[in-house]
Structures are given as C-alpha cells and as structure tokens.
Length: 226
Image (cartoon, rainbow, N blue to C red; front, side, top):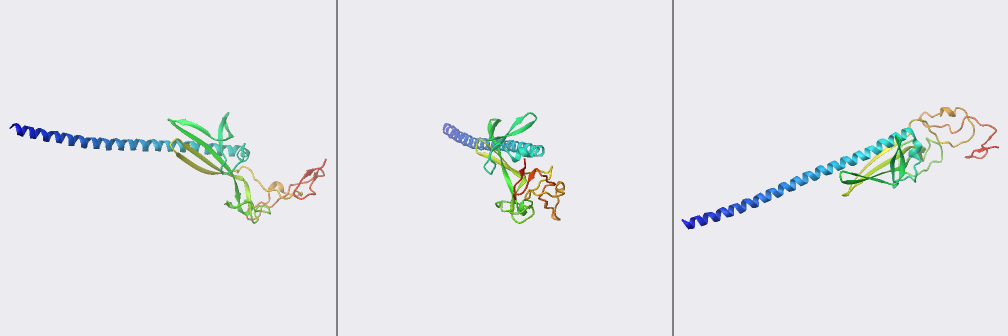
C-alpha cells in the first residue's frame, strides 16, 4: 500500500510539472501576441499622426498659394528636389522658413519638412508636365519645353523615431489670374485681353502701347528714355 502511494505521488508531480510547462508556453504565447497587437496598434497610430502632420502642411500650403502665390514660388532659399522648408505661424497665417522642424507627440519625435520644385511643360510651357530640360526657343504653344511659372511641385516628408517615414506629393497651381511669357517688347493692341489661338495657347507677346519714354530698339530689352 505504501509503495502504491509513492508511485501515485510521483505521477501527480510529473503531471503538475507538465501542466506548468504547458501553462508557461500558453502564457508566453499569449503575452507575445498581446505585445504584437499593442505594437501594431501603436505603429498604426503613429502613421496616422504622421499622415495628419503631412495633410496639415498640404492644406496650409494650398491656402498660401491661393492668397499669395509669390510666397510659394519665391521661398527664402533655393528650390529643388532636395530643398527643405517648414512653416512657422505668423498671426493667422504662416511663413515659409528654410530647414526642417521637429515635434514630440506621445513620446515619439516627428520631423517634418517640404520641398518646392519648379515644373516644366512641353508645348513651351502650356502642355503636359515633363521631366525634360528647358528647350523652348519660341512662345507658349510652340515646340519645346519651358517652365510653367504657375505650377509648383510640393513634397511633404515626415519621419519619426524608430525609422518610420511618410511622403506625400501635391502640385499647386496658380489659377486666380492669367499669365503669359513676354518675348517681344514692341507695342501692340489687345494685350489686356491675352489673345489666344484655337488651342488655347497665348499668342500675343506684346504690350498694349508704347510711348516716347520707352526705348524698345534692342530686341529682348526694354529701357526707359530719360
């Protein structure tokens, strides 16, 4: 009877050890799954925060372009694919400053900036966007490529601690006034109406009137006669 009790006790001990081992495995797996879920949720929230920060810049820059195109077209430093600018509050609006800015949100540091690039178009500046270099020797609507001064490419970049990053691109277009490329300083009528061809290209390259105080004898130049 005593031997039977010893044997039974040994079996119970082994069963307890096995149960504890299985329990440990289950608890470890559950803990890993919970940690993964929490990390995934945290990463998702971080991406959402970065998306909000980039959208905030895009909205603000769109408003700035609508109110004052010159502030976008002529920023305080050289434009280009690798340029870096950020916005600083100025009253109820914003100003563009050179460089990047950082902010801490829920323990993570977000760095934010945007680049500004000129845009070239075929048909001498009035056609489709192209990466080709400027090659236009005539007026708008001709053969070749020219810069479109009424379109700017904005790329907003947000990065955060841990190696994450997000990029968004928008093309801003000036649409509140008509523009044209001046290639001839001689006087001509109807300049105020910006005469166009049937394809919509602006073909009038002259100003409306000239006076004796304006010297246009040199092609491509205009001088005031004193």
